[in-house]
Amino acid sequence: MNPDVAADLKDLSGTMESIEAVVDLPALRAEIADLSDQAGQPDLWNDTEAAQKVTSRLAHAQGDLRRVEELRRRLEDLPVLYELAEEEGDTAAIADADAERAKLREEIASLEVRTLLSGEYDPREALVTIRAEAGGVDAADFAEMLMRMYLRWAERHGYNVDVYDTSYAEEAGIKSATFQVHAPFAYGTLSVEQGTHRLVRISPFDNQGRRQTSFAGVEVAPVVESTDHVEIDEKDLRVDVYRSSGPGGQGVNTTDSAVRLTHIPTGIVVSCQNERSQLQNKATAMVVLQAKLLERQRREEQARMDALKDTGSSWGNQMRSYVLHPYQMVKDLRTEHEVGNPSAVLDGDIDGFIESAIRWRRTQATAD
Image (cartoon, rainbow, N blue to C red):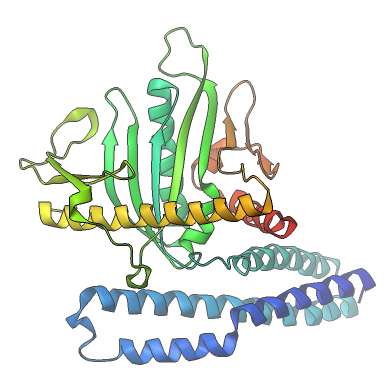
């Protein structure tokens, strides 16, 4: 076998070994066995919420195990493919083996990123809020484009999403939206998307076809669990009820079932209008508020740590530019990762940006 190929395969095998150690395959198999046992209990669905957590975690754990085992199997098959191809002098088969090796390298690198998610809240599901910022109607339209981008990203990965609230702008787009991504490590993965996103394009809303720069903000919070003890005093809350609305301000139901909660001490405002009853909307809004308070607490702790280290963390501000005119490019301002196909990015192809940002965040943390 070519010495360079042999060295590359040895390097890939070493990376896989470190991934397998971090994933802890014996513990993962034991967890799958335990979850399978729970899923097989006849009274499982007496508690629907708990049952959904068990079945969802089981499906993801089985998927993680399959992915690691499949990559290892393919990696072990590669030397055999090369030996057979070289014995027969089959250049086409060697080219196929090279292509498989390149694909494996990419997939192993992607899996390796997961092992970098070691923060306290990284394994949690994620609550994402998108807001239109400076730029008027273009910013509202951009906020809706970003929402679609994340929903398409989740769809590509088979993650379920619940949209809790969408506040539509008058002319086009949205003022804000909040949704939950149901997947293990969704928070750790999407937390690097937090910050201000910038769009440069010829405005479709400008009669003179001028170039417009607009901004939208993305917030990501970990979903609260019972162990977090995020207590909210009712006297600290202002509760407003209103009628749900759709695009163009049209009413989508005939009762005042939508709920807006204002947390008076912090000024945090959350809304929910996707449930059928006012009671359900208030319960969901409380979950969103708790998550935002937990993320605020996490950020305050991080700020105190940064102050002790005398280092500033500025990556949470403007972090990505989407340029549609005069050229086509999407660029992450922290990592320098860029692509020349904004259409693909806005259609949910953002894994390259997420992975490079997770690696960048780890290097920043170790540098501090």
